[in-house]
Image 1 (cartoon, rainbow, N blue to C red):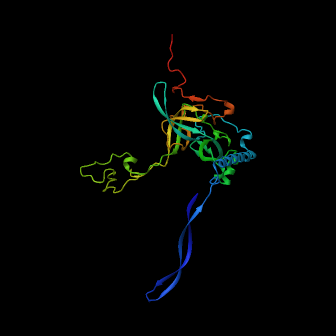
Image 2 (cartoon, helix red, strand yellow):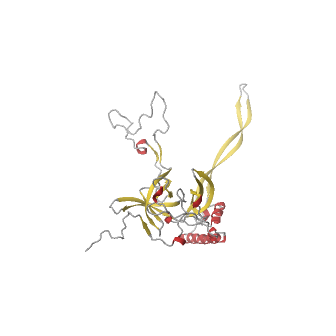
Image 3 (cartoon, rainbow, N blue to C red):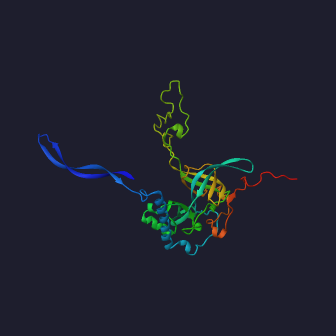
Length: 345
């Protein structure tokens, strides 16, 4: 893989200045020069065959598992004490991958569109410093998701993963949790962390549309196509008063960058949870493109936060709660495996 780079040189060159006395004097000055160079960077698998690439990846994963096993794994120690769920507790969230959208039906025959979110290789990393938010003492948890190749990370980052006892991850993000919801580093997190009927908030980066006009960005009607209008059909028109206050107010809707910013969808209902594939079925659409990473956490809406009074706290532990059913459905959702009509004699 090749890339163009630039080198800046600071040179001392002579300068000739003509004086009024028809004489010339030579004085050195500093000049800045730029030289473009071609930098070649080679990946570890760039010049290998397909069979050798598979062998290298397999051997790399085995070597890292051995190195991780030699380190102190937090899960080998005694478990941390757990607390009961109380009103106002804030649990850790999940990092999921957006798969796509599918339709579902309720028992009343209503059709809804849901988004499929898959949770893969989630685990807490370590606890950040705490701060006070209102009446709740909140701490920050760094959670990681999606395994990644360890050759593409620095040694300092790899040491952080080894201390936590988890393989290297692609995404590292932070969640605010209360003190009674702290989880031991290295504990695996599953999609069963959320249950059907619960409402969640989802944060992701929206799809970037580039620089767009007001008609596409804000849905302006535009100006007439005829009757004296020339080259102003898609323009916004007047942007503000001219006499008083003689300025354009802040926040005026104008052309500009559309999309490519972080947005949060609040109060989305969880219709279904697939515990085998760790897939969440969330009501409606969520920000971001397909296969993007997004954050899923308990909703902060006051009218929706009490939807599930006894969630898995601080998270779902498969060793204690046992194996759940493959699919968990909301009580109002129609299940295809169940009969829709019953005949009575």
